[in-house]
Length: 200
Ligand code: HEM
Image (cartoon, rainbow, N blue to C red; front, side, top):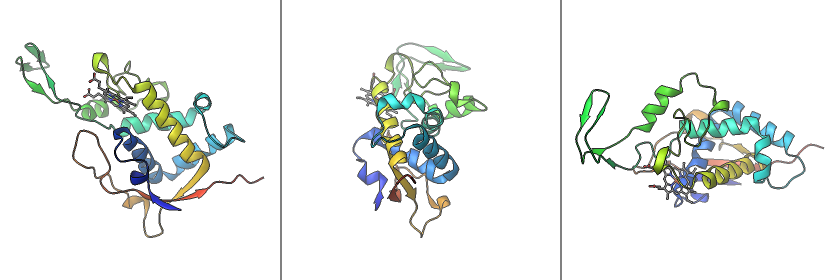
């Protein structure tokens, strides 16, 4: 079976792009993919579908999820902000009613050096990893977003083995994006999926 991940997991739902980026990173890092699959297939046995209650058992898989959120911010520049009042950020005086663009990517990249992902909280309490941002405009769909992302990715890795078409190498997978607020992959990620069947 061969298909484009981008096209089949709905291009219209903006957060589905996280699944595509997770698959991009895993296809480019086959050892990580294998290790995550081994964990899933060793810990969760004899099930046809991974459910939410299974997720806390998956230590390595959850680090992979955090690393995907760190590497692939879906909205790196956020929605424009406008200041209410005069303020000072480092050496810059910002006047009231100024439009601000926050580059979260830069912030996260600077802060993340040498951080152990395992201990980081995704949910706005740790500024080193803020895929849903923080404070009063934090994403209200965060809990649902994390759970659906984890369940979808876990099932893709649990039930299927993934390969590139023979004409492609892992280095050929690109990071080009479509211009816009959310970072959708520009060129479809085309992969071959094979049903995993455990050796008895
Ligand atoms: C992996 C999944 C998701 C990610 C990475 C994500 C990320 C974000 C981010 C970064 C923002 C803040 C944008 C900004 O401040 O400029 C945001 C806002 C928002 N998100 Fe999500 N989100 C996800 C899933 C969801 C889901 C499932 C829902 C709804 C069911 C949702 C509803 C919203 C809404 C309504 C806002 C605007 C909040 C406001 O402006 O006060 N999100 N999201």
